[in-house]
Image 1: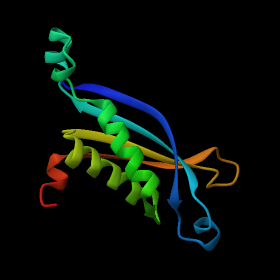
Image 2 (image 1 turned 90 degrees about the vertical axis):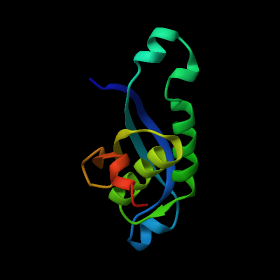
Image 3 (image 1 turned 30 degrees about the vertical axis):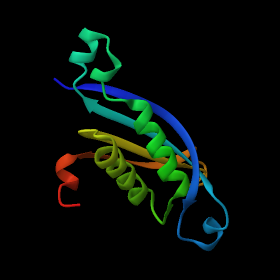
Length: 123
């Protein structure tokens, strides 16, 4: 059994895209993260030191995304997973990155990826 911490609809701005009009200004992205971890110890002890600190993950992702520059949402999603795993110790993560207004008549378009520590072992 794996427990989850879910961060929904983190709204940030970054440089994303590859066409000329996309690269003029930062654009909105919406990020959803599911952090898979074991919460049993913290659930029993009620000690913050016994849980994955999702605030630390959130702050690291905010800093990374706001400073980033990617052509694709796929690359942005992968980089978010890498930051969460390598910098924050998340063992397994699912990341969805949406780009509002990217497609005509659609609220947003996005990708969802899932990564573990094994995916970045050689990094």
